[in-house]
Amino acid sequence: MNLTSKDLEKFIRFQRNEYTESIVYDRLASIEKNTSNSKVLRLISAEEKAHYYTLKKYTNTEVKPNRWRIAKYYWLARILGITFAIKLMESSENSAHQEYARYTECEDLQRLSREEEIHEEKLIGLINEERLEYMGSVVLGLNDALVEFTGALAGFTLALSDHKLIALTGSITGIAAALSMASSEYLSTKSEGDKSKHPAKAAIYTGIAYIITVVALVTPFILISNVLIALGVMLAMALIIIALFNYYYSVARGESFRKRFMEMAVLSFSVAGISFLIGYALKTFTGIDV
Image (cartoon, rainbow, N blue to C red; front, side, top):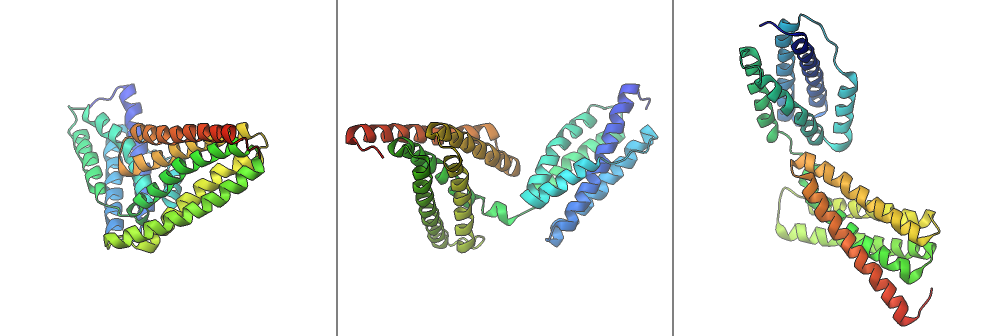
């Protein structure tokens, strides 16, 4: 197969990607505790390395792996879980699979295309991480905290008008709500009888998600004396939390980011807007000025 200069450039890029991903999968295998999962990851690593040598036949070029990508996916796996890192990396492999498929005259690249497609199938049922098993508990904690707490703080903003008092009241309300949600999740999980989920762990995941959200949303009222500016920053923080969580969830679960993000954002901000108006109405009708 005669390669044009443009094709050669592409093949070298493919070659670097295969070498890089071979090392990434090997690194992930070294930190995966499940022996069966680790074996699959090492097998895929070996296949990616074989792809590198197949491409080298056409380029006659030695290439170095992308050290930045290796470090990136390794630490993403350490911090956010192996499933997240793999799914994120595989999304780029989908484009590689399509690129290989275009070279219909080259049997080697057609084989590589098929094997890249098989990789994804192997990885679909590969990882069963605890953090994903308890994702429902995290969703419950985050969703409830964002909807309930943005609404509560918006209502407190006009009803109380003092940033320190809002922060204090919000903190007490948030901690009490977090404990309540954790307790409810414990009882709910226990009553369901789901053996794959431990009630205490489900409660902890729910409570931690709620507390983290409370801290993030109360902080603007601690640092900013102007309550309306603090409210604006709080709503921006809520939007960032919604975006970050739904990005993680959409990658790990392979679901639509836009749909989940819009649903959660609209719900949280609608409740916040209604609560803000309720706070204003109560302050006006009662005549209480704190």
